[in-house]
Length: 247
Image (tube, rainbow, N blue to C red; front, top):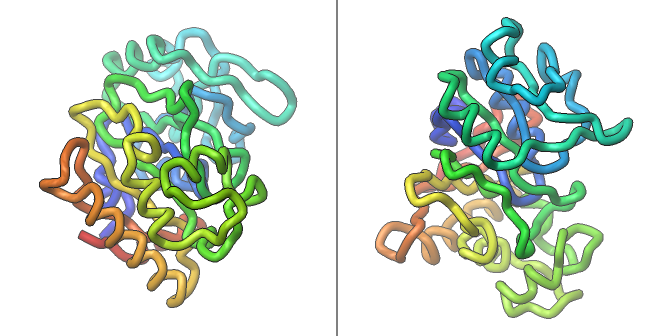
């Protein structure tokens, strides 16, 4: 299955979580016709990942006027290593004004491999029709500390595991499937496709399958709303990123 199909990419796709948000955005941007990359939160400089970045207060206008794709649109360069993101009203507006697929970074994780959001996160546009909560398979066996986990205290609250304890597949599944974690503030109309990234070998694929089954047990069809019908195991840095799809 190709990446965009596996991830059920729609008109406005948002990535949240940790362990591969940016690589997922850029992998999709390279494979979609006329993709536009943007953010509702800070995003590291990504000029080399797209054909052009437009720094503009009028993203809808830039999308119409700039021919190069994939295109990045951001409101401001905050400092040498990152751009700011647009507020939600702006993203909702230009999502309604363009037919180009929009790819949105909707929270931050400071390069960690797992996270749970705080009260201000994620920043999901109401027009989002696909949300991709992401976690890394490589976090399994790591201690629940801020070395590998963003906001470990929030992850601990979801998993009932103490800070410092070893992370297990059930913990990652619990975070991805929680309305306090990967499913937080997902728009009612949106399709949710959790992604277990960094599945770099057979052992990690087996780990990813355990995580996926845990997600389906907690958030699969018939468990409530929002629901999850598939989990994608991926290696986003590979030429063929989809390792497996668990349904």
